[in-house]
Amino acid sequence: MQDISENSFATFKRLAAADPQTNLLVRRLTADTPGKFLDVLYEDLDQLIQTLQERKQIYNNASEDVITMALVDMLKQRQYQAEHDPKIGGHVDIVVRGRNPKFLWLGEAKRDNGPAWLEEGMEQLCTRYADGSAGRDHGGILVYIQGKKAHQIFQNWRTSLADCTQFDELTIADCPRNPAMAFVSTHVHSTSGLPYHVRHMAVGLYHQPLK
Amino acid sequence: MADFPNFSDRVGRLFNERPEVARICKEIADYVLDGASTRDLHLTLSLLRRQTHPNSDTDLLIAVQYLTGADAELLEPNYAYVDDSGEQFPIATEEIAKGAEAAAAALGVEFTNEEEFDSRVLVYFSPTAHVVETVRRRETV
Image 1 (cartoon, rainbow over the protein chains, first blue to last red):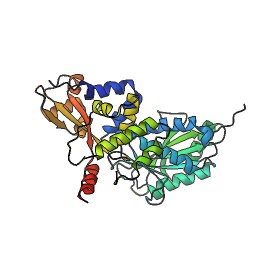
Image 2 (cartoon, rainbow over the protein chains, first blue to last red):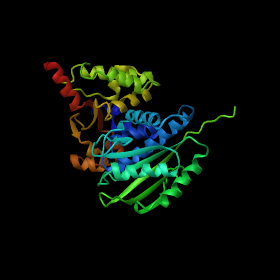
Image 3 (tube, chains in turn orange, purple):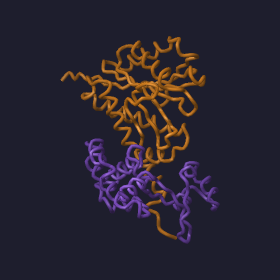
């Protein structure tokens, strides 16, 4: 039998078991359903948010565009077709497609300028850009929090969103991946009439060293 | 690289903090674009390792990750089952995604366990249809 051990799928899987990056690579290559695409995308996004937070001294005063462009570049490195500000029903902040272009995820990124500003982002995402059709029924709101105590600010947004009446049958649930800094809202999309799921993600960028 | 005029700049910018990854991307791109239309390229990880002499496997995998992505659109992964006689039977990514047992059933080969099946599946990369077409167009001009 031909020796393929160095290049076998088993070897890839062994590498993947030992190395989270290879694990994500294999999962991205084999993501054949919207669910698998989202699963790995959210894991990638969580890692990339961590990277942004590690560079908070750079992004503490940066504009939404600068932070979003950095995130989009990092998504491109990870096999995604990611774009900032393309025209999809308007100029959505982030569009992510997988290797299978049928899988589409839209994201709206906002600096935390208070709940009304974030509510506007949610409205733009859900009523202007997303059509809520099957396979395109998930999106995201990224909240760039440049002020102190991201968790508290983010919880304020969650509380405020729960009071919004413009999103039909809105429910809010913890995100088990990252319950402190992410949550998931679901409502009936006004275009498709189907449930539309939004993952809200906090990016803590406050940086004011005392020494 | 006339038809990928920004490739070098793009990877240089994207991987400005990892110049080794940018270098590997460029080397693989040069290799692939040099006759992608005429050679049946089966680029295994070990071949790419020999070709690019990476500082580490991590750098090589990050480069492969980018090159197989939608942004670069340079390589696509392929899978082939290799039988006892060395004959290769291509397996579609969709079959691989369903898991070893389903892939074995689709091929009509005996399945004993996942590890044994996966050890017979060769993973290699080849130029995307986009690259092959681009190179072909370049060569006919």
